[in-house]
Image (cartoon, rainbow, N blue to C red; front, side, top):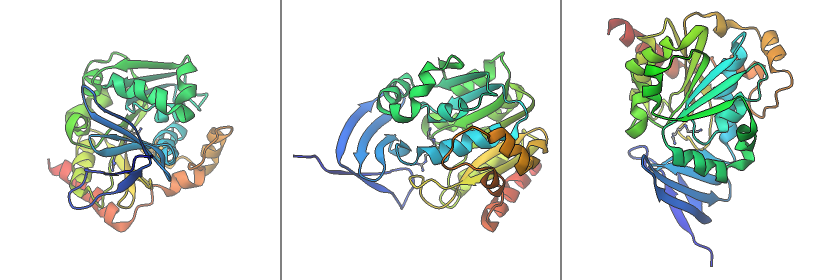
Length: 291
Ligand code: AG3
């Protein structure tokens, strides 16, 4: 007899998304997280950490493509890339599609999430582990950023939400260290939550980014499992140059890279924000100015 169980996300107060588990594939308490892996008829494999959905087989491409390709295509020479978090390696897979990338360092705090995802999410992450450009460090991302001697063209922060182990990845101190380890013309992009449900977190995180970087913005992605409307990805750089790359240039850089969500036209469109998000962005930047 097949087991049936409902898994409800515990991330937000007052509202939740629920998944029917056609099968419970794994339940574990790792050193850092509670980890659940279930199989759902629509989303395929669904990985939850501490009761919050992190990745599903069916919709991972939407989030990973936008977090990787927007900053990478916007950069003239994204040779050295750093991913903080992202233990399922779906983001690494997108980054390594770029032949312009010469090295990818991934810093993940939880070795068991990495090992586990390597076994269970082969469908998307298998190519990563055979790629000589890929290097993993099991370490605290915040500590890595504080200590690294290496500099990067692109830093991607693929974090959990700003609670528990992920909280350190939303602070001005962390962003100061990211700026320190970025090369000239470097770009940082961050997981920044669903502002309709996480307004306070959005303003705090963008405010912290804006207190450190001269140029701060955000762009949109819709991911079914991160429900509640648009998700925002944070953007930080020292100049506006990479925000104004033409669609023609993006198309040249995107040639030969296979995607299912990202397009050069959508890249540019993703920075056109609904009014309420524009207002929150302005509020966050203003907060940063006045301290
Ligand atoms: N990073 C994004 C987690 C967002 C979770 N939010 C939520 N469930 N509403 C996940 C890691 C993907 N590589």
